Length: 415
Image 1 (cartoon, rainbow, N blue to C red):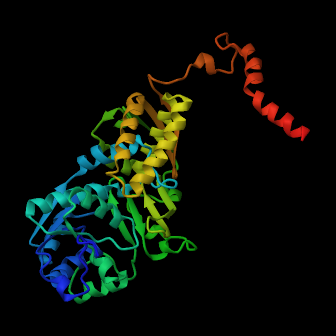
Image 2: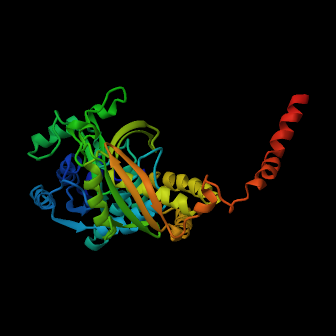
Image 3: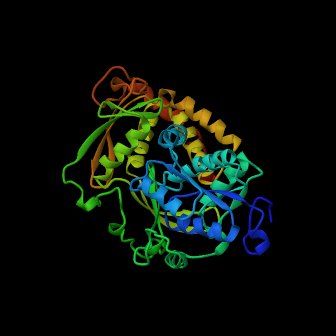
């Protein structure tokens, strides 16, 4: 086994290798259970690290007290909302980042978490970092690949993967050890939450033949059927590909996303039932709540298409898919991603303008768009009578444009 990975299956492995651990701590079921488990099994001190990523319902002060009550030597609660928005989500927006449909890769947050875990580990002189990811998911790869890239000597502990506990066993362990957790057997759903989206798993969600009872767990949404009967129109202004205002009120990106979650969520926008292929080979389903992400990405893609040539849009679409697969696939530090980001920065220099979106019962539809860089001329595009576009040039164009297609069919008919 690689020297970076600590396996707790033997007493010798548990004792002496690790003295201090930085635990990525959310306060949920997995990390609450493992905070105690690491102390008991590794006899190591635990430094908890919690990040404010703009998540909806977390009481960060309660999470802090809970970690200390469970034996953490220290807990860091760090506000990274602006860093998350400006350094990670902004790149995702420019890339139209979406994996296998409308999953806007909210777990891009894992790269920021790994960065801070390594930073705190260095600051605290810790031997290892720990996370609550399972061996069946993608996040273990995102966190560990990033952490080892930033510090090849860091040790990694993944208790959920090591102990092979399911959620029922974790709940029993928590009850036995007096650990308060938000998950109960009659509410088996698990959520990862940040400003860019909430990813729901477990329970009926795991069986694609069942309809997930989303009314039980949705946090940011009104159900589309219960949304207002009157549509709402909002205007989002973009500067160099990034949204900078809603209805002419300018705000920083993190605030804009959080505000838009409330506006679009009220109309049931951005609920995604998603089948996807995980890195480890599993095909799974998740339910995602992404109101702000869905609106911003819909607006951005339309504005970008409006200002670019057809050839630019064609290449950008290919690059967007590649970017999304790289980021979903744990390759945040892959050198080619830096090159694609540079391409996206260049393309988005002219993604300027205002997009009007109609929000109505689960839909977000672009209904108007303006830009100083628009490749659009009303006099050329109109179907009304005009003298700008020479329509008499079209027959010759059609003749030349269809030449090889005609020749190919003539040859085919002779043979």
